[in-house]
Length: 296
Figure 1: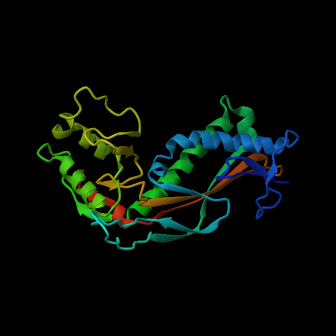
Figure 2: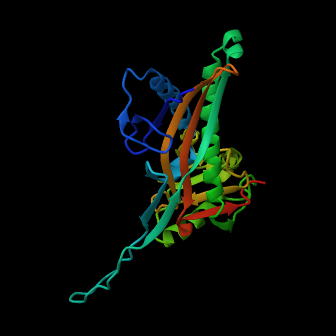
Figure 3: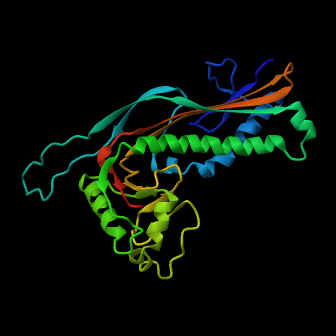
């Protein structure tokens, strides 16, 4: 059967009809496009449910695009000259750039609801599938960002679960190295087990008098002003990543997201396909460090 397609622009966040699989045209969805609106609703629900689970996307600098390939120059740093004497010309310096070539890949979730399941179910089968789809889109994205983070510079850390070790010594050492390279360190990303060791360490507990424990996956790190913590189970449970989002250490190519609805009358089911194009890329290895061995 005909497959109504809609796609969501990552640039302007609007929904459009797609006349052909390879053509992304600015044809706005109209009230008369009933099948398109249904696909939009499913897509909106999935993205809305998935958004809070995109934890690791927040440590990346987003590069939004509606094409699947692009060449982007990322400005890195400019070196100034200190204490220039009067009547002395300062040395010339120029901005440095890192070129990133994007060739976005796609993550796909295929939701199928059979006629029998729809007619026999006592629950909202489609709603349950939508929730599962959102969770899996987030799982795939976080996993792929984790694979990029694995290319960070390894630095040996200490076991934060050992009460004799001070986690701040490891973290401040990484921050000093990153900021010595000219980038402001602003995040730590780790598995929940690593954060449990960190927050229960006596050196950390001493800085938390009157401070509320983290209530979510994104939180200010106690004792480290300006540093935001990110907790996600996709990360290895023995390491912690200290890095600079502002640098950026990692960029995230965010492409369009597409949804299509179809029915297979012969087999007796309705289906929705959701495709999300993306690509995380580690671009500045000097702006991130991987502390190893922080959880036994």
